[in-house]
Length: 424
Image (tube, rainbow, N blue to C red; front, side, top):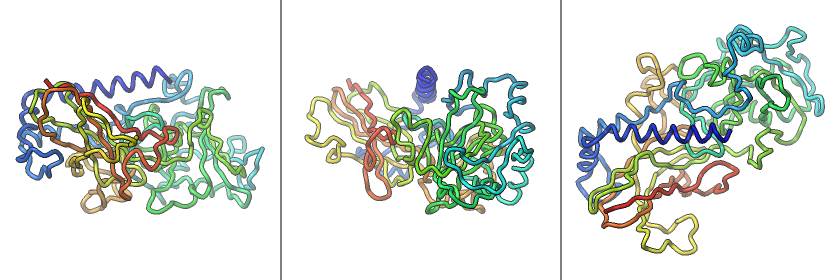
């Protein structure tokens, strides 16, 4: 896990550097022409055409399946198995089976368990029959609880998990469902997550349902992305969205029993909102504007603003203000929904319908779109020579500034990023 994480972070950093180095002088000139005033966070209503081209060259909003970052567990990782082995263990659409059984230690009462032994387990053809009646699509950023960089953003497609749970005909003593995927027939490698059954049966507020997912950006899930079928929990971190799912266990247990809890994580915390940078010049010339871009993860509390603050390191920080709430933050521009979605979509057309998107315009009904990722930009006025620290943060829809309301790492990354800049 440690080596995979190091590789992931290195690749993310390298990709960002390659893009902005590719902009070269043209990109720098475009940024320099950006604002008619010298104030950071200006409206940016009329951008220079070169700036428009530079922003259009940012990473696409949707991520191609093969470009998602991978933090899969397993020795070996299941997606790396030979095709013959995948077929043998149910990791192909032709051989996949899903069991729905009662927890022997905390039993729920089921009238019709779905088991391989009885020949009643759900197969892929059966899942597609359910999809004919109720297919769900929604946009979601896949992100890890303890990593600051999202793994990728996609349109996830599947069948509500509750449709399959009801096939087992539960009648009573059902409080939680826990589930796991294939992990090399080794009990020590089983990675399990769980949900309260209330979340499976009913969607809070305007959240999408929890799904058994089989497509990403309109294409069948690849093995590396968890195919043929995985769980996707819209508002949750990645450890809830188990790959290669093969068993649902319906239980009367009153609490979470996730594998991830073993490492002192808060396993029921939903996505947080936070901002991070993509392009920050590590060195700049005195009195010349600084072009900054970044992204924000839009958690369940939304994002109303992204703000930046460039601090002169020779000056003291605000006293008794660990979250910098009294610092002179300025607003950045939140970029509009993209003109091109990316993600490898044929003709760049989104599959329809998608929850929280207008089917006629294919545009999000609100922006920033919760549970997804957005981009932002700011032009900071030139500063005298010295050493500076750039920070960025989100303000959620309730006016609460990052890292609040949940500043603790175990419930998800929300630390305020700090980037050093040398001006000479």
